[in-house]
Length: 390
Image 1 (cartoon, rainbow, N blue to C red):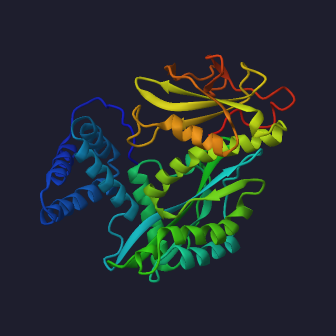
Image 2 (cartoon, rainbow, N blue to C red):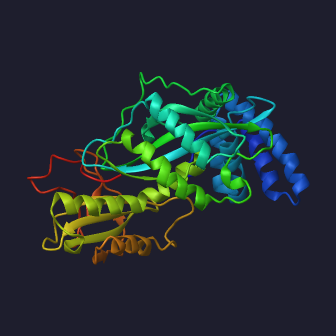
Image 3 (cartoon, one colour):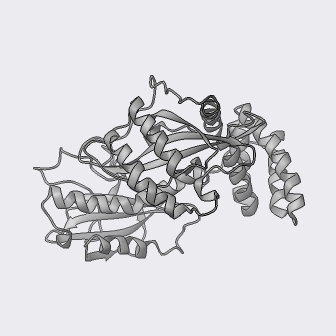
């Protein structure tokens, strides 16, 4: 997935050099005809590296281009993602695509990540086919609701997972997920869960309903919210939920990341209102930028208006994609807070270090007096919930 990249040590291998050359050529191409030539070369090269599980060559090429050639980086990142989502060459007569259907959830209790019963899978299959997929699409669902910690890690693992689900779609079956050895799920008050599936369509046919005349993404999302959300709710008992439009895996993941930021604020205000019996008008929110070598994220510390020092809860708003210090993120955060009913908002316009608690690893949040402190619920509430929102 496209992200801020860290420099790696060591030389550049032959496969990496070739990949950089191809991506640079595509970025500098002057015509669609030339684009197609570079595209064919990149398909062969990237598919080969994915099949060989050469994650290092892919990432080293991305690191090099990120530092040297922004357009080449964007072209290569898009290309690697698109090839990973297709799982390589599975069937000459069909195109395959891995899709994600994110669900935003918050709860005072642990948010489940577990197997999906057959009856729920069957119901989800009906609604995805009716509201999201194109008419010729075959569908396979993974029978597990994944947390972010449990998703395939890296491009090669994603391609392998897409291939397995794609073969299931061509066979008309779903995919059973082996849960032994699966990573533990971190405990957050607000988090995302993922329904993963693969679509197989005849070569060059549309994947999604909005690729067909008379439909749109907005219409599909409205239908999925009203129908698909009801199917998913039983999988997340005790949770408030909001669905994100199912689409190609990496695009769905990025959209879930974007949507999770305002969702976490809304969840925080709702939680504090219920847990502390405190209406939004009695809350104060303190927004501050936090830096490592550069701006990494904003953190929002919540307190009661009658206490300037104690932060009772916090939200992290990470920067995504091309966002940097020039993006007016504080205004976006303030707009969400005001929409939730929080009127007492303080913005601290100076650099804070990216600090975490030495004991538990939780982020440190800004207080109204300009200090960074540990978010702590009052004693009578402190052990019932996680210490911060995801």
